[in-house]
Length: 216
Image (cartoon, rainbow, N blue to C red; front, side, top):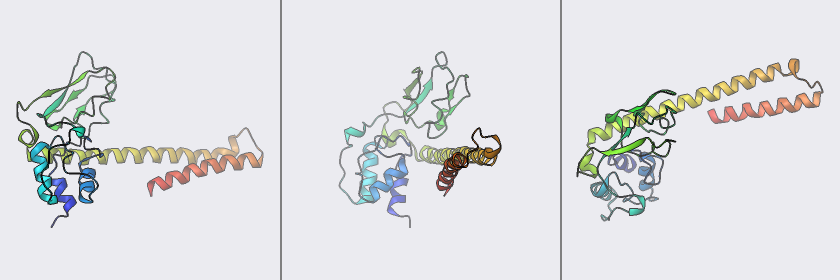
C-alpha cells in the first residue's frame, strides 16, 4: 500500500506551479504528510482538490486559502512571435520542458505539455508570454484530467533528470579545469616562491574538495 505521502502526491494535479509555497507537488505532498502544510494550498486543484486531500488526511473540508491563489480555468502559455527575442530565459523555469527554441530564435509552447504554471512569465524580459484560457468555465479538476496530470508528472521527472545531468556535467568540467590548473601550476606560475605556490595549491584543492562534496 502506498504511503500517505504517495497518496497525497497522486491526488495533486502535478502542475508544479509552486503556488502552494513548495518547490513542487512532491514537496507539498511531503509537507502535508508530516503536518507541516494544510490541505487548502493548491489553487490548480481547486475545491475538488481540497476534498480529495481532506479525505486522505482525515480532515474536514475547508475553503481554498486565498493567499495561495484562486481556483480558475486551465490556462496555457502562448508566446508572441513578434516580440520574442530568443533569449531562452523562459526555457529553464518551465517544469515540463514545454517551451522549445534556441538562442536568438523564436520560441514556442507545446500546448499538450504546458501546465499553466506561470513560472515562465517573470523570466521573460520583454513580456511576450501570455496565458490563455483553454477550458472555458471549467476550473480545478474539472478542467484538468488525470491523464494530463500524469503526463505533467512524467515530463517533470524528465526535466529534473536533465537538470541534474547538466549540473553534473558542469561540475565535472570545473573539476577537470581545476585539476589541469593544479598540475600545470609549478611550470607556468609567475611566482616561484614555495609559500605562494603552496597557497595556490591549497585554494585549488579546496575547490576540488567542494566539487567532490557536491557529488557525494
